[in-house]
Amino acid sequence: MIEGELARNQLLSLPELTEFALRNNPRTRQSWLAARAAAAGVGIEKADLLPQVSAAYAVTRSQPISATTGAVSPWLTRFGPSISLNYVLFDFGVRGYQIESSEYRLLAANLTHNRVLQDVIFQVEQAYYRLIGNDALVRVNRQSLDNAKTALEAAQKRRESGLATVADVFRAETQVAQSQLNLTRSSGELEKARGQLASAVGLPVNVSISIRPLEQPPQITEMATGISDLLEKAKSSRPDLVAAEAQVRAAQANAKAVARAGLPSIEVSGAGGHTLFNDNRPAGSNYSIGLTLRIPIFTGFRDTYSARQAQVQAEAAEAGRDALFRQAEVEVWQGYYDLTTATSSISSTQAQVRSAEQTSQATLARYQSGFGSILDLITAQQEESNARVQQIQSYLDWFTTLARLQVAVGASDLLKTAGGAK
Image (cartoon, rainbow, N blue to C red; front, side, top):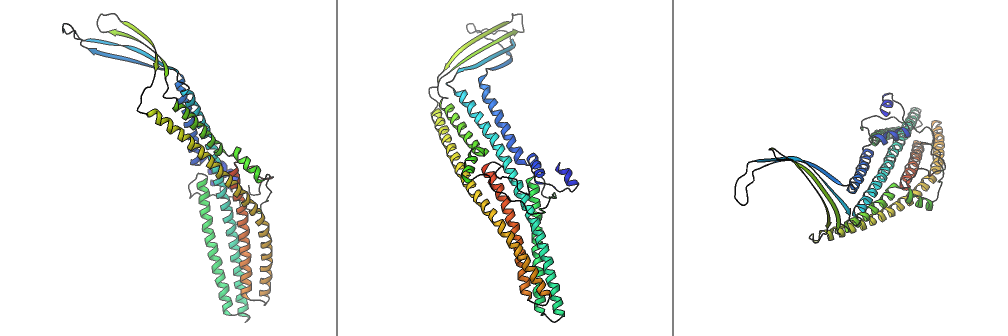
């Protein structure tokens, strides 16, 4: 889908880029394949619930020697099929706990895949908003360059009229050069952001991606829930937290299975075969069935250390789960107050831009009329440019902080209404 849009130089939206990333980012394929491997692991463990049947076809050629007379008999060839069956009747729940452990590992793998999808979406959002911000910054720097050129023209005219010194012209030229440098740097950052977005969606970095620019200020909305509700929501919504709990359950079930591996087990076995000869001897069939009580007596303390290792691994999984819970709480806590700060700063930057723009226009008009100094004009233009850059940064901070908070909570319904650029 994206390739066709790129061929037609279409402007892509965030949903289109996200859809393409979920289908093409290598991380999504990697996590999906890991989940499929875990599903196969469940089947492997369940195979022990079924009897193990094997078949063979043997051909033997021998020359028997009589044990009493030492006479050598003619060569004898035996051949024929055989079949054997083995099945564990009772093992104190070892197979059950092994299956339970594999099923929890499968659940953890599926949840991890879901978390990877969220991470990929967040990665695309970050790259998308960074590209939008750098695109807006290029436009601001281009406007600043135009303003600096206007100031240079005004300074040159005043110089020709004898109302300004050559130093004023030099200062204006310096400001034009600085504005040109800022534009060049921001253009480079724009291309870097474009490459990062291409990589995030699973494309080579040299693929040019065009996005819809931010034509108007986004609508900033309030949080739908408080910090306490977000903390509780994260415990049930974040796939990696639920996956960590599943890993703990898997480790605990594995510890129980390993602890019972040294206990006795009851096995049933059976075999059957049909033997044919190369001479005139009649063919024959043989059958057998047996019941075995297998009692491990001494294995070099292998079972003891295996059980101890499995128990420690289960405790380590619990510690990892608790550490992840604490980390998630910190991420939600910081994300919430970062978003609150970013929301408050937007109104401040909007007022700052309006004031700086009016001041710059008034100072330019005074300077063109023969009043004021070039330093006042340059200062006013710099303040306007800085205010616009801060406004762009405030919007970028709001979007990226919101995306980060959504990943920290594991949900995307944190606002009363959707943000403008989404």
